[in-house]
Amino acid sequence: MNLIQFFDLDGSRAVAAIQNDVARTVIGATSVYDLTIEALAGLGGLAALIEAKGLGATVDRGAILAEGRMLSPIDHPDPAHLYVTGTGLTHLGSAATRDAMHKANGTKTENDLTDSMKMFQMGLENGKPADGEKGVQPEWFYKGNGYSVVRPGHPIPSPGFALDAGEEPEIAGIYVIDHNGQPRRLGFALANEFSDHVTERVNYLYLAHSKLRACSFGPELRVGDLPAHIEGMSRIYRDGKVLWEKPFLSGEDNMSHTIANLEYHHFKYNLFRNPGDVHVHCFGTATLSFADGISTQPDDIFELEEAQFGAALRNPVRMETEHPLIVGSIY
Image (cartoon, rainbow, N blue to C red):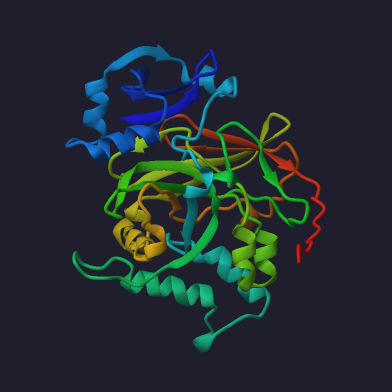
């Protein structure tokens, strides 16, 4: 089962469940977050709660997307309580582009390995521990909060100071922290972990800066476990034509870490276990148009597609002018 959130034709919020490629409203539901909180307070899970509420009228996902009425598949009433984070160098082959960046800058460590390649090898060696054991921690980054999330179909802004505006096709885990401070996974969604790769290439210590950008995920939330093998397509359209396209792989069959290991090393911090918070955690990628020399332009359209996740995630890119910044004192 997949879930979507959207604005109905009268402007009211609604939730729909998708089964057998048919989307039907969840009776009385206006928010996936509220459904989750209600499910956590009861004895059954999210799927059982939806079944109990019942399904109503069918809705047209294509029309909702085309008309700009689709919401992200989860949000929080206070956007500051939604965290967007991620891990890198987690996929087989994911170190190649990063390693090339470092070698171009002459940045090497012991045994002639870049820091990226060293961390990638650590994941290969101990990113998939046996049950009950702790594996090596991955690269980790903070991306933003709910204010940095762009709805499916809407433009992803690239700030005026950015040096690049590049897509990163990923799978994101979606979590809500329960009243006991334990993370509860709802499922997974497609995510465009939009980044500035030119800034990152200047020096790998700029990675944190390069990740502080907007992003988009959805449009559908796949409830349940992540398939072991995911094979989607990442595309960029320019002037109505495909400028670039390439497959992207994910799922544990194509990763150097288990999902459980990545989850542990995120949620081990007390900061990320505050009851009621939402977490959107991106699991990394190995496919970038930047690696093929693509430089995006205003109004280029990103598209991420994978049949197991339902409708494609599409967002144009919008270049912004830099906002004047004046830091004043109130002393």
